[in-house]
Length: 291
Image (cartoon, rainbow, N blue to C red; front, side):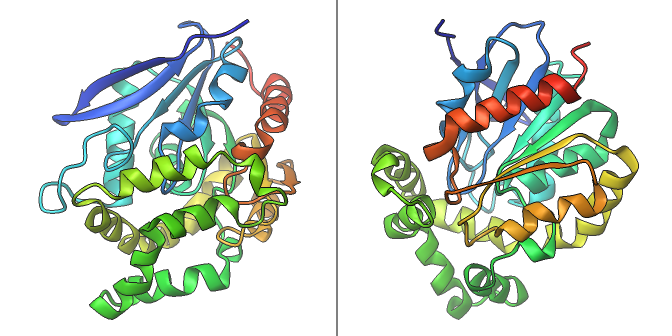
């Protein structure tokens, strides 16, 4: 059975938030939070595989996809602000309880939601969504850490390369044993989004704020320990941005975390969507109450 996916928009703080939605309105909710440099587009194949059992909702963060992209002088591009907008988005849609799927940037955004309202989060699925220092790939993060320490034209220059087509393509193909399995539509779609006027400045502002997430790591870890939230890590083992040590670290605070290292890279859904969907259906079916 094919499940229809709706493409909708709501207004949050005067800003258009675009999102994809599928599944029964009264089903348990899965909130899918994408990472850089993508959008809800990264979930295009996953959503139909889950929509028979769940109400699946995937917004585009402000500055990404089809959501609003106000300039850096019009909107504070910080992870705290993106989380606040996402929180208001969930309230507008009446999402009282939901399981989170987080990837890359989606992880600190989703975990900020969990800190604010732990009672709303029924489970976490993390796909290369990091919360531990050991998950940071040293080589990939070196230029970003230099930018965070001091933002200058010199520290910006290597980070700007991430926003080019070659930089985006590397994130999709690196660590993938058979690159022909990755549709060029995916990285070309993201690169086209980043090529829009003002987008490099938006992304530089946001990544410059990434250090604010490191400061919250102890709070994230305390949340894991205190809540015992069910957690599934489905992780591209060959990712050099968020390395597999980051997946294994979840067991330090959540001993019952279920961890699967998959033979792929940063965007694991491009090559392993069927396997990830099956793991999610099994995990959520066992670990999350449907009422």
